[in-house]
Length: 185
Length: 184
Image 1 (cartoon, rainbow over the protein chains, first blue to last red):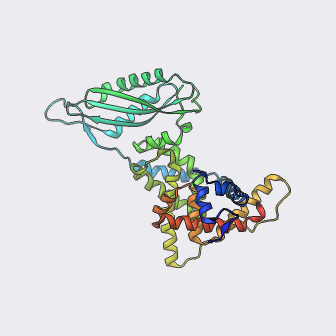
Image 2: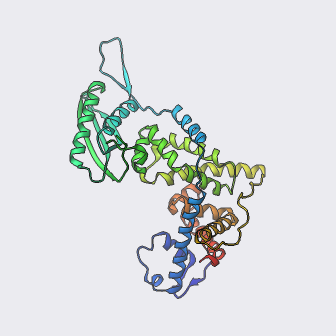
Image 3: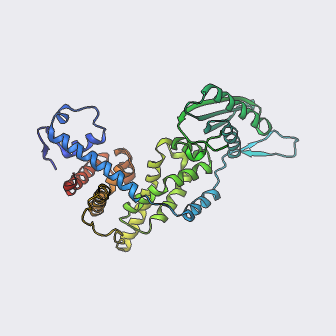
């Protein structure tokens, strides 16, 4: 185990850690040694072979099994906080869950062409007024500014009827550009 | 045109799932279950428990999504959850002294001439070598090479030091390299 490889003065363990660090920062004593380079190339081939093994062994999953997993998940809805809606009178209180409000925001944003909503943050200040921050992914080649504006408008419209407090601001952050397929119209 | 959720990148789906979007989580489950079951099967040493382990790990993951720090690496994170559950199963088995089921694959057949068969023979040979590794070495190999965890993440999962991970992984690599010498 403590034997060094080639003329590098490095052990297999050091070489293995160097490989896992992505061969960076570059160590000349290793990179200039033919035996070390051959060893690193072998490690790389084994990594590729492992990935091939994973693909070969990743068979189709039974649809019934997937349905059972998802049925359990659906039974454990993570609704988040209850947010009180503006009271109509003193005797009744109506609340909306944070989860339901997030779903509303997501659906509104998803309706915009070439856009999928990522995360949705909701905050109610002392006023009380609602602050919304969403991240979105936009399909490659789509006009980003226009899409972000459209998302903001769609969320504003959707919240107008349902928000627990007046909407103060809606921040839209584009944090993903993806090359994805589209739903046939 | 609306974008299909099924085509969204992992990071976006994982963020939505964190916010409680079960549809996004469903897409992740469908996308990564084949890998997770293959990973669990290897981790358990070839076993019929893999489906149950992955099912329980996914439900646990859904409950603990708040702890997911890097949404883009959700596959590795799910594999960590699978590894945790699989470790429990292995411990229970060890206590009961039950032998794991034999690997369903037969012994490696002699390589066939065409390239695809040759590739398959190489992966099968690797599979046999991994199955024959000492358990502690196979574990770090699978967490590093299959689940793509960092040394620190593996160390946290196994409750050992990163230096121990580094040593075990090097021994595993040495053993696999030696056993696979004819495939180089």
